[in-house]
Structures are given as structure tokens and as C-alpha cells.
Length: 174
Image (cartoon, rainbow, N blue to C red):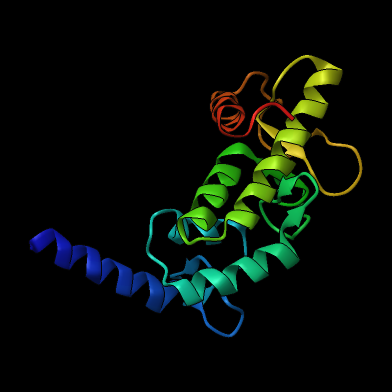
């Protein structure tokens, strides 16, 4: 009973501080400025962990479709800053959480679209370069190496390998 209450309290706090009802999405919260941060793919985490209600999931699906979904998967953000966790990059763990999160709430169509888009991206890059990498440039055009960051792009990155292997198991090779 204690942990159920704590989970309920946490869900209430997440929805109070992080749900942006006006825009239909979750956002990070800047405690210093006491304001919501910019929209990002982190918005799908409450779906992945089952904290949203179905109305929130439906509204968030519309926002993700219109602002983050590309033919290559979902971008980390819609803001091009040159940082690695922003547009134009797509990351395997964000794809996985989005796929599973939307499917958890019954939006199989969006989950499957993200999965197929991501598999096509990774496959296209693999066919040309014979390797998987940690992040991909997925904003328009041909998928290529993602950029930004404080270190060189990593080959054979574990979470990319794991997500792609599981998606191929679920969906088959693209």
C-alpha cells in the first residue's frame, strides 16, 4: 500500500509539473526558472512508464507526429542547436521508448511507423557503411551520421545494437 501511494503521488506530481495542457505534451521542468523547458522526445517517457492517461497519450501522439516524426524516426528535439541531443539527431533509446509507449496506449499505428522508419534508417546506413552507430541524422534527406557531442561518433553502440536487434525480431528486416 505504501508504494502504491508513492507511485500515485509521483504520477500526480509528474502531471502537475510536466504536463503542458495547452500544447498537449510533457516537458521537462526548469526548477531554477520555475518554468517548463522546450519540447523534446523525452515527452514520451511518461507513456513508456505508464504514467499518462489515454487522453494525454492521444494528444501527445498528435504533437509527436507533427513536430518530431520524420521518415527516419523521431528526432530528439525540433531545435537545431548543434548539440547531440537535438535536431537533426535520432537516438535508438528514444525510438524504443516511443514505440513501446505509444503501443502501450493502443496507438499501434504510430508505434509501428516509428519502428519501420527507424529500421529503414539504420538499414540504409548499414548497407552503405557496414556498421551501426550511436546516433543518426534523420531530419530530411538520406540518413547519415549524427553530429554534435563532446566526443567522436561511436561505432557499434550498445543501445543501437540492442534496439535494432529487438526491432528486427519483432518486425523483420527492412
